[in-house]
Length: 120
Image 1 (cartoon, rainbow, N blue to C red):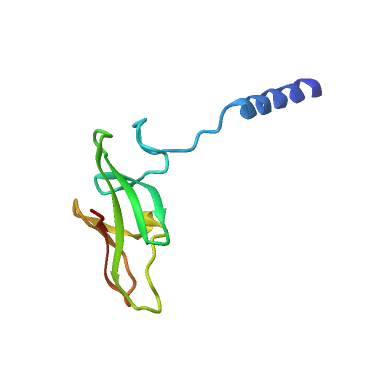
Image 2 (cartoon, helix red, strand yellow):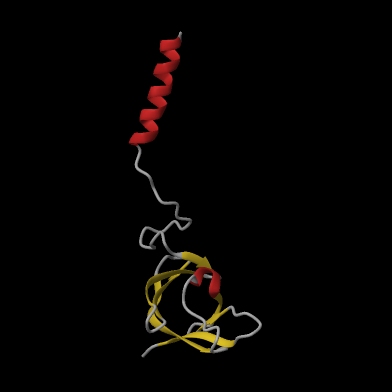
């Protein structure tokens, strides 16, 4: 009886270890990276961030079709308190709105008019 229980445990353990670990992605399109996050009517993927220049290369995908709508480099523009500058760090939490051109950033009460503006 002990051997049968031990055998069942070993089978369950071996099956759980042999299956590949898949990163959870809530989008159903294969072309959208798993790192993309959902915002409004878009999936947004932050492809890269240049912290020195406070810029980010971002790709927007359609939620309905999964097609690339826009891919562009954006630069942080912010009239902020110089003691507390705003940096690109977690855009999934920082994005307030996107109007098709600029990305507006959530700011604290001490900062105003922060946005990511396309770099030409």
